Length: 143
Figure 1 (cartoon, rainbow, N blue to C red):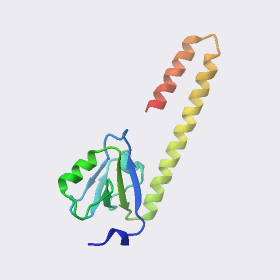
Figure 2: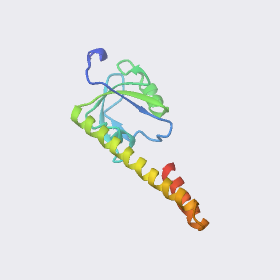
Figure 3: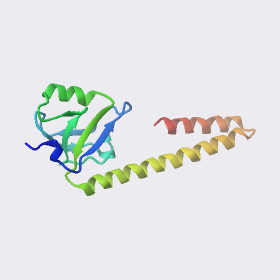
């Protein structure tokens, strides 16, 4: 068993209130550090760069070395919840974070474009078109 302070390359990740499922399974439960067994395609874990083989060392600010398995399950369901993860591969984590940044940038550009189109349509005489464009924009932002 390794002291968590001796671990390097720990990454803090937070699943916010809008995250319904973590999108990952584990190889066992605490006590002890646990490895990520699998990540759901398109899930939260994959989107933030977690990969199979990464090691979770704490959740909710609590070290997993002495954690009760029931407490672990409870904390996994809590939102927001913070994880400290040691990546199996730093390159995988960096690639995952880069993909997340690109996805956020694409969403931002699409939202800006939709908002501009809605604003332009509001100024036209075709109120039905403006209403449709605004509805599409609101739907895009809500997803």
